[in-house]
Amino acid sequence: MDKTDKPMSVLVVDDEKDIRDACERILTRIGFQVLTASTGAAALEVMSRNSVPILLLDLKMPGMDGMQVLTHVREMDETTLVIMITGFATVETAIEAMKNGAYDFIAKPFEPEQLRIVVNRAAEKMQLLHETRALEEERNRTLADLHTEKTRIRTIVESLPDGVGVTNSQGQMVLMNPAFLQLLDLPPDCAPGKPIEACIADNEFCNLIREISQGWHVDYEDIPSHELDVSDEKFLLARSRPVLGEKNQCLGAVVNLVDITSMKIIDRMKSEFVAKVSHELRSPLSTIHEQLAHVLSEMLEESSGVDPHILQRAKEKTHGLISLIGDLLDLSRIEAGIVTQEPTSVCIDELLKNIVDFMGTRAKGKNQSLLLDLPDQPLPALMADPLALESIFGNLIANALNYTPQGGLIRVRAELAGISIRVSVIDNGFGIGARHLEKIFDRFYRVKDENTRFITGTGLGLPIVKGLVDSLGGFIDVESTPASGSTFTVTLPVKEADSS
Ligand code: ADP
Figure 1 (tube, rainbow, N blue to C red):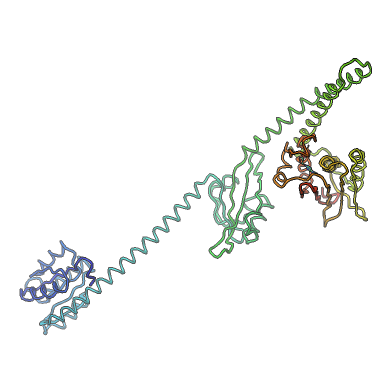
Figure 2 (figure 1 turned 120 degrees about the vertical axis):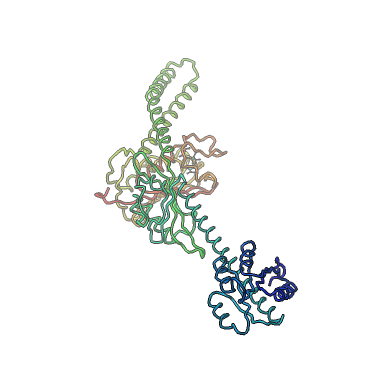
């Protein structure tokens, strides 16, 4: 018996007072709390008011005998351990009582030591039962907690305003919250188990999710986000990350969808606004520019005494504004996805030669060398809008000349790279600091430092170049070291004439 706890109760039921007193004395001494009853009815009465873990019950009693009491006790509390007290002649009845649910028996007359052993054994058994029950309760509680926790997390995922979907390692959907279904225009009762392609109509993104699900992208940094056009009026930003198990093994992918329709609409409105304003400004400005030029030449002829520099400056400014407006309109058109001309077969060698020839005069003006490196074999023709190509390389070469000091060297190199043509514009000019590199393709971004202070520009050249390269399915890359120079590399896919 655990002596630190409250003493365990034993109820002694016997019609003989001596036995009751003897039991009480012996058991109290070893730490039990002893209750007594002289009849079966009195015993049941005590049990209805107290919790009695151990019952010492005389078999032979006047009135309700031990066997009857046992039957009632079993009905009242099946955990009570009943020890039958029997006479020599009634061992068989005692065995019968054991069959009916008594725990043990002790034969009269018994020695104190015998009583102690029997009752202590019952107390130990009772203690074990308590501990087992406590463990069982604890286990049930933990399971219930886990269940509640799972339900709670599920409720949170279900209530998220962003779309959340999870795939297994085979690329099948195993979880889709209501926002996920709603954003992708899927029916609300769409059941998991479908392949990702059945839910997202963007092959490139689905392939990426499959790769992530199979554990190809453990480095989170290199996972690109995607823009999904669900319809003309619904745009989503989609991101995906691997779901890793305890041993870092990939279990699948989680896909997060955010509705960016309103941002896209505002962006579109901004672009339309810029396009409209630019368009409205262009003609009056061009007229002013021409009239200024006219007035300027007349004044110079008449030598009117007006400082021609003032008018010259005004002419330069209007010219700058006209080219800004031209750039803005180009950019608006590119962003709206309007291709100016049908793609035709373009010989890139010829196109580059012409641009380099044309720019040669400007290079000479700054005492710069502008060289073109072409491979021995002619390059395959590109299916593209030739004006777009002229704009791309014209801008890059003009920048190289602009941002390279007097006497510098600019090389234009074209080569075949697999199924693409790669053109690099390499200069040994001012270079671009690392912190500016990411931003130079943003609209109106210009690096402002000692070297570039007096160079005029709009900050729209590179966004135009990037927009055009994107529209041709290519990509542009830049490497640069301040004070050493920059290399802009454009890679364009060679397409078959009939595949465009
Ligand atoms: P702009 O030349 O009209 O300023 P761009 O969009 O063409 O606009 O270029 C953005 C900025 O990138 C430039 O202002 C310049 O600071 C930097 N840049 C572009 N090309 C080069 C280059 N070849 N060398 C150094 N800096 C460059």
